[in-house]
Image 1 (spheres, rainbow, N blue to C red):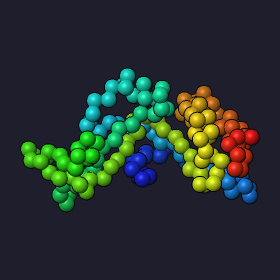
Image 2: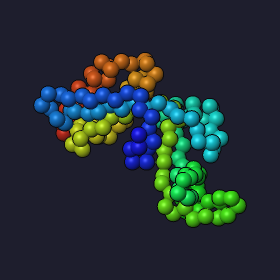
Image 3: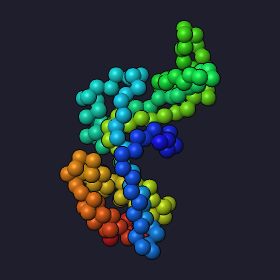
Image 4: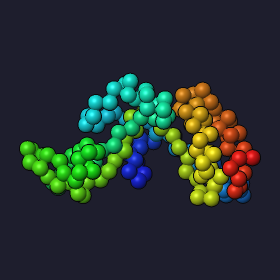
Length: 157
């Protein structure tokens, strides 16, 4: 599944509707980690460090269609430069598409713009819950209790 630039291998998806409180509605998405493209040498140590810091590890790259039948992955650096080398020749890749591939499991929610879950407090406080769901150290009941603490137009109740 492609969401913006993010290439996701969906593992779980669930919708929550809070009977009349539209601003509390959300969709939970959990994606499985995928193998590396082979463009970079991201070690297990690198992945673990990224998970400890961000909760996930990813790689960014470009996807370039260089003829009718073939697509080629290119490094993010080549994507940004707008050129890469194919068969020993420099080729413009201005029409390449950016992609983000998660190398470890990853989760997030989709909520309305006016939702209390679209706040700085939610972003900073939710990491432990999202990480706990992925690691199996927290259950969805804990996550729902956390979400219930947010009020409309308030950072936290």
